[in-house]
Image (cartoon, each protein chain N blue to C red):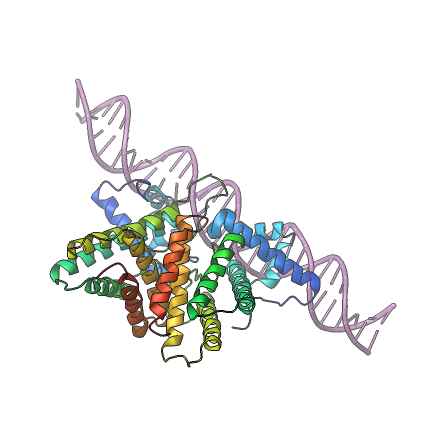
Length: 212
Length: 212
DNA sequence: CGTACTTTGCGAGTGCCGCTCATGTTAACT
DNA sequence: AGTTAACATGAGCGGCACTCGCAAAGTACG
């Protein structure tokens, strides 16, 4: 709900340590993947004792969740920045820009290929209650955040007020984009260019129902 | 490459045991999720000694991968069956049928909500070589299988020969469908009806570039 | 039926992992 | 300086994935 961290790093040193742990987590995800990733190795590489690791992160999933959140923040920041720099003529330009930035981060940001930010990493709670599912909430949140931010951007760009089911449509578009781009990077580690083009086409076609 | 199993169950008893292990794996995935799933518990519930478990499955991921493969087979079988029963008038009917069947399986097949068959579950190999990535191969394979089967079905249904980039388009469509339907079931455990409708619309719009 | 051989069944044991917690260290305030 | 609170640390604990040596059950052939 509040934060993915157990204790928010108050002092400069703590903050640096948390950042370092996230950095090492990212490169380790690239190197060996989620299953083989160990909290001890993350702590060792970040030069942080294991006990301190658990002061900040609730568990291994919390670590990855925090990384996904940081990736999300970076993505939104960079997209916003790019928009303010280059004015757009049409809403399709916004889509291209967002996808291009996503692709750029897939290529340059360590770990982004494994957990961009849409990742769910599955953890259903028991059949009834007992320890509410934090991973799912997080995924829903992240998706909602991206869609919401894009909605705001689209509204600022367009004169006409957005339609009824537009929110849902954006959520669908973000989810589909994420999946297809993952596919593009699975086919080709550098990102299959044709598939990235198809991805843009997919979203354009779909959203043209809701936008002029 | 060949099979996800270490040793192919030769006798009737072995085959039943493998099926039972997959069954229990599926319900456990629903109950506690992938991270909390243990091979011991799967073996215990299936009444199979742990040593025997590892005769058939290479590891925990192999178990889940085998389940995904079984789900894929079941899906293709059921879709094929439904097609032969109810003749279709237009290619959009094929899409609806496939999506409806996917939704039906999400609702009824244990574990299908966690690992339908598009699941990747991430396991990149090292930066260079060393123990090739089986999970990724599997995901690519499964996606390719679905797309290929749908392509064949589409060709049988349509007179015109399919276009150039149609294969890629189908792969994109399958991937996007998978992702959006997952979203629909994350929003609502029974499957958000509006979102399922949006999913169909997304695919229809996109594929209308490639089909009449 | 007996013997030699192959295949399959088994679970105690091994090493390593996620995570905790008692104890030590530093800061903050009076 | 004395008191209290906040943070740091890593040995250790329970439990996990997975192995391996041996038992049991087929199979082949005389």
